[in-house]
Length: 359
Ligand code: RAM
Image (cartoon, rainbow, N blue to C red; front, side, top):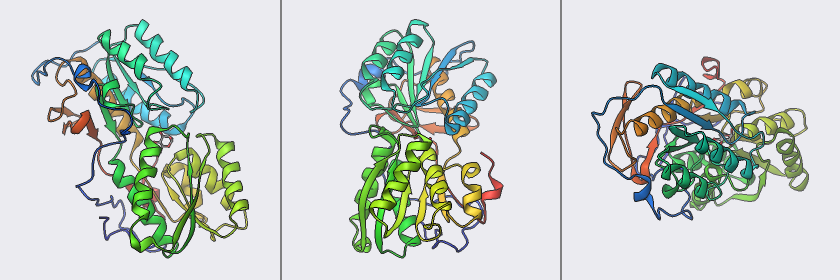
């Protein structure tokens, strides 16, 4: 279970404290309904850990949406890593986090362009699968990062943190903030998003613990990673449930919009808000008392690892099988079940430590 170092809102978290989370939890944000039907096809061939790292490769980054600062930071991390490795970076992607058909078209275009690898954050677990399988049949290595498809639709998934840890810790954070009592809601991203849906699954499971018996999850709203929609959804939640005690928003776009709404409303300080956000987006809301604590990983490190994983795959150093290891940025990573690679543990940010983080 969760770290004892996480304390009730308003009290200090040691600066830079990362969540000490259970190591027993399962892998990343892989949704169970997309089966590992042909995972073996995705990870065909044998890894040669001593194969030289290829240079001059082209890796196409395809985020859920390009105009989202979180993905800008993540993909910049990928760009920097590829420059270091002597390979080329390109980024394509839709403006909207719900434009699944555009994501499919971008996969097809990257396939036609015969890039060496694709790093994609999937808007929808199933929609991209056929296009990604075609890319893999054409010899392109596919890495999902941030939001997965299914194990058969890519070679490896670079997960920002263990999905179970993220889901459970967000409930734990909010429960402490509201004193284990009252109505809560979730403001999510797109209804199809693999990552958010997996985290929400763990949130619901965590809420089954008897210590949350006085907490009621009244609604899951979807702001589609759109600032305006997320703002309106927050407003709607409070109109529908004026006695709401807390909101979890596991999306950087959602939590920022919810903080904006709460901050300018009579609910400021009365409704607790936590979830996943960037320190730059939420700094002012932490300082003005709207948000006590929230969490995230470093998106640039996620993009960096996605790029290095793509190059390791394209170089034949790994194939995506469980137990394979590779070195990236001075660290050794081991592929877990279903080709999931965990970046590490998220960091909890609050008034005490937020000024040490600038992303
Ligand atoms: C948004 C996106 C992304 C998610 C972060 C936390 O930027 O939905 O997929 O990982 O929030």
